[in-house]
Length: 257
Image 1 (cartoon, rainbow, N blue to C red):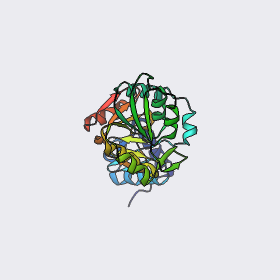
Image 2 (cartoon, rainbow, N blue to C red):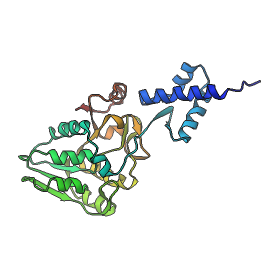
Image 3 (cartoon, rainbow, N blue to C red):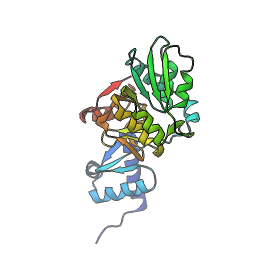
């Protein structure tokens, strides 16, 4: 006769799974079953329940931590972030005079625009109105703001007009903002309307940098942008070491800011 589990036992196992996902960003079904001494089917059932409850995101072979909720652009921009500044400075150090740079929407890309050295002669192609405004007084930056529908939640121009305008350029580098990055799931976002413009920036560029704050690394958002190996990650030094190691093991280039 099959043993019926108590509510307390199931709750304790769920708490253990949530703690493990929170601390390690990812959990494997097989290893969790072995550590807890239960069947793989039991862990799959647990993970399905936690996924349906909106607490984790199930992936092939286990589960990962959910992408952090993203407030409006204004809310994110007004929240001080030392990590954002470190990422911006690390990326700016890669820029060279005369380059044509694709600058995607986002708070980190806006920070890059505001910190751009005033002696740097550069062309910026962007769908980020806030970045264009930040460069208004730059003496040597040529700014091309692509048109389209303005998504006020994410402060980005989107739609076919924006995509076509981005594709008209041959970019030395694109700097693409994402909500989440996972070595297996790739770069993902919570903004469905921005997926085509982000892909256009990646396709138009020789190389693509993705700045990642620590809370976004090892998480997954609902909408896929591109595979992990299509971009180079620029991460902060205090990002989770185990996730950084998984990125490198998967052949992903990671630069530490």
